[in-house]
Length: 232
Image (cartoon, rainbow, N blue to C red; front, side, top):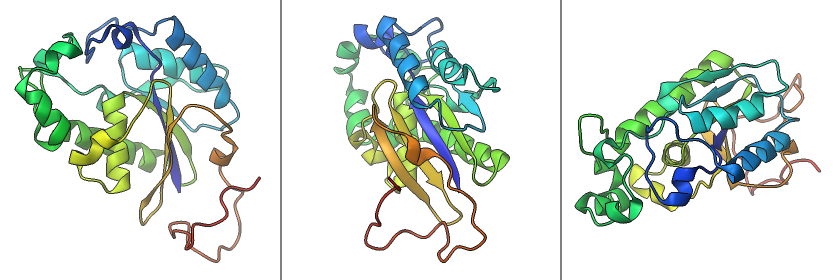
């Protein structure tokens, strides 16, 4: 079972100013975002990571670099985990975009939303490339690997929706805050969503279990009745 830790980048100046950053170059973590990145790096310091993969945008690279620091790992950029390509919406204030007709489509029927302009893409395209990236890294890193993907709010929400078996039109029900951790374990049969929008607390349960010679149930089987949770 391969486990991916989905980490959203820390807070940026664009977040606090209410601007849709998209692929705008040079958007970096603000002072609070840097503290968030250091805090989540400390939380995850005991989790053995097979890889640290990141969106190529600065805010994610900064956050991922904080997690990779002190490990024998280089941050590996992957464009497929980059922010949704918002096209002509990029760099505009959210309060202005909320008045656009497309805003209601993004909120109510995001699978049909295609952002305007030559650089714009559909949210369905965003989801497809991001899920493909996760699946490809799972295959490369192999079973029992735990790895980290640092990405963006809408991208992580789209990956979670896929893992939950939700239509993309429901992904706005998911919340992914800056520097939050969401975790998905992929088995041969199905994904298991282990955490969503986790911003604090113990991460010992993310440690890979010791290998056993025999298993009474397959790792892809869901626990009937809900189980006892991770060992104390």
